[in-house]
Length: 393
Ligand SMILES: C[S@@+](CC[C@H](N)C(=O)[O-])C[C@H]1O[C@@H](n2cnc3c(N)ncnc32)[C@H](O)[C@@H]1O
Image (cartoon, rainbow, N blue to C red; front, side, top):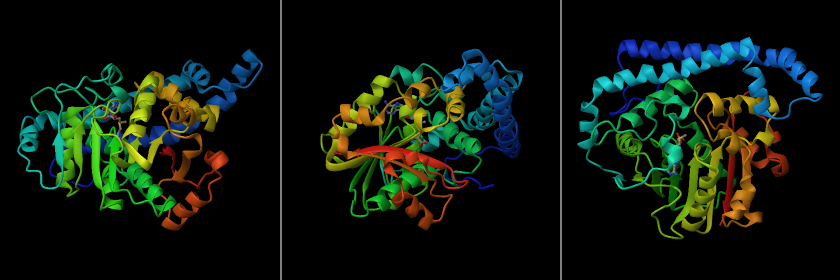
């Protein structure tokens, strides 16, 4: 299993913490592979036939499948296992961070910025959708501060994400960002962004690939959560990467009009409200220079998945504290982008394999061979694939 790259502020924990995390990773893999394959059988042979009998038609909405599956004993057991596992991820990491406080906060406070910067806004009003629930069951969410200058939630996310991903996203947990940066570079080789903005960066793991792929660009990253912005800046400095972190709301950016060449985000929208999606796209349009590009990595649309695949994400809406995910999956991004000011014919959507899962040749082939009319119909063997939605200004 790929190990997470160590850096000065990573709290991977003691030997016992490590073993606990390792156990959870293995248990999670067992649930996702073995127990989940049973879920599909239960659906095909027990739940779907009962739904067809009751409704006279095959289910076409993942939310209906979710309700039916959660009444089945196998479905209930699967749900209990996966939810418990999710809680255990955070517990296995949180204990180590608590033991390191307040020392960790002091070390971050004492950091000398050499490459980038961090700007906080203590008066920022946090959107309710970022504070109302502990998203994906992470205790304290992204924003909670228990001490002055707290970075705990950033540290929790950094290690927790690695445990969750079991190393599949690379040693820096950055395969999403790397895939996005490589897509932009390879799909439009003449486009050389000089100023890049990442919205909803959390600790910047998926921001940093933009520094690697576009080393001449000035890189900015924003998030509403102060502990993540502080930690993200410290992490970037420790890894020797230059980026400017800001505590800022993507719905109300403090940047001037026409100031960025490229605006990106990585799994931000599904954690915001329907209204916020429109506001964020409008702000992206405002801060982009004419000729600039926005490109967002997100989950696929429900319409691009089978109803059963959609159920697996809809489940998270109801049982993994992702309250906006189902709504997001049914948001038409082309329409939302057009409503935000982007021309309809400037819309871009891509589905590409994870950059770390395929060769560079296959990645480029995937970019070039997309049937844009139905780009999500493509699959690249066993490689994980990511959906991108964007537009040129
Ligand atoms: C799923 S995380 C994104 C993770 C990160 N981009 C990555 O790829 O690992 C969503 C992040 O968006 C932030 N966020 C949500 N709404 C926001 C908003 N309106 N403005 C800025 N950040 C926001 C949350 O605080 C959280 O850190």
